[in-house]
Image (tube, rainbow, N blue to C red):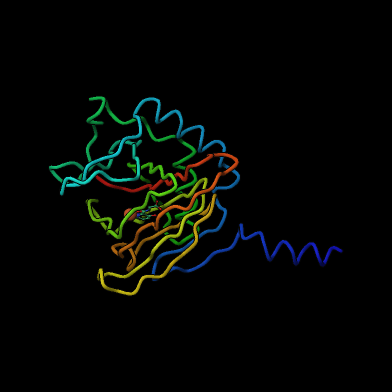
Length: 219
Ligand code: MD6
Ligand code: FE
């Protein structure tokens, strides 16, 4: 019986697993699970001060994913371009401070993936609903690509696309689930990536939503 239980666990419970996604990119399965309810409560507090909004791309399209930020700097897009700003244009106020629990989780995950000493100053909070997606892009608005990015997934699962340095490079699909953490740095730092259209579903903690936190050293 103990054997069966152990086998069942190894089949269905992937928390604690580590997968290499590419050079310098590591998927840490389930690392955020013990903190999930705390992280979601912090997201709610952030959104009360800096509401989720659908930003416009420089080309004039409204993004399907709703976004907000916390930390010293927040990522923005509008007709003027992609950039970081210390002020939320919707409120005229600084972004809400980065919760300690975000910093601690990001620092620990980065260290586990081989990037000791990571101190993010920006956290983009993405909110997906079924039908929304994030098209293939590179993260290149940060001052120094030497720092890694830590990405935390909560709520509904998503299919992540992980490509290469050229847009035309082959794209690999990775299932990201509630509690998964991805750390990217080194050669993968500028690889193209995106999120496929979110499937319908309901998650016990987030309902019809997927949240993604991306923590960066932006300035
Ligand atoms: C998302 N993530 O998972 C979108 N960018 O919803 C990103 O765009 C991303 O996960 C840079 C590094 C890690 C990421
Ligand atoms: Fe990205």
